[in-house]
Length: 148
Image 1: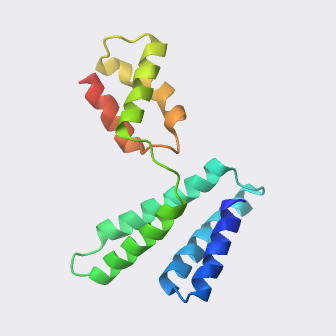
Image 2 (image 1 turned 30 degrees about the vertical axis):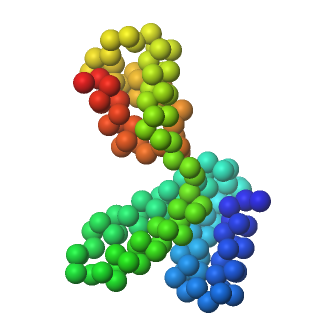
């Protein structure tokens, strides 16, 4: 079952249960997935579906971060949206798992004493392996720690 079907089913449940916030979030996510499929002119792959979900989560987090502190209504709405979106998001890799992949990449490149100059080579090999499974900023931070 594709994410679109899964989300549509959950949206129907939310409508029946009169969960307005959940229904609106799922409707927004469903529209984003459908728009991506229309742009692509083909069905989305699982990775592309996860990409859309992560993009929606990122936008919601940015909205929450940019909201003034006194606008608790916006912040609460964003938190509720993130809770719903996280149900459909892919499982994130742990720091330990990312470190293991970094070590594996360094071994495959033959880098034993990494320096700042090696960061580009490491990232080039590493990112395709963790794309969609780990946050890019976290990966960059962990590689930086290893190089330091």
